[in-house]
Image (cartoon, rainbow, N blue to C red; front, top):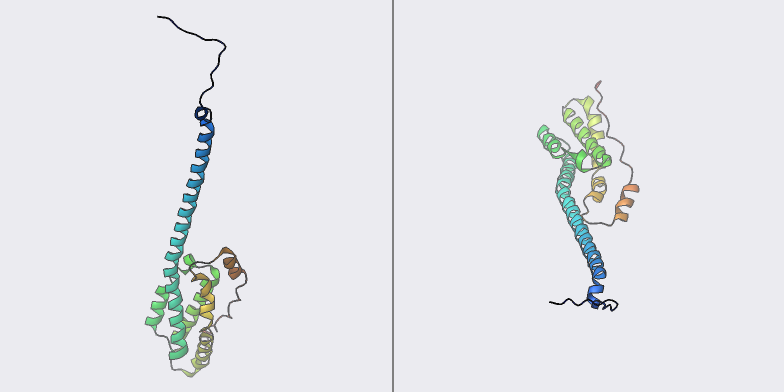
Length: 181
């Protein structure tokens, strides 16, 4: 049994062995980029799903507002049942809209509540009733303008920023019910 030891002659490893650390580094970087892309796509999917889920709830509030405004503007009266349906439909508005739309929805609710009180045939309520009908009639075109930024499913971030910064002011509040009438 003999052992051969050579000192002084050095043989280099094959090229693929020498390049193994670079291949490892490159493949790790590529896998990192792929993982980041998959994570970004999952975030986009979750964001789009959230927008679609909010769309259904926001559309229900929009439809309730449109229906209440049309009932007051065209039928000239609001029943307690209609008001109850409206009030049930606008529940949770603070959670799916900002304060701008929430205030708009509450103004419509206040005006409708006053209309219910003014449904009496007493002549002293007639002036207030006509003012409330006029205010609600003016909201027929406003309702779409107020809700439009929230009912667009996909829009660029710049558009969202401009819609929130440049939105028109809310209309004057409806005439308040006076208890001394």
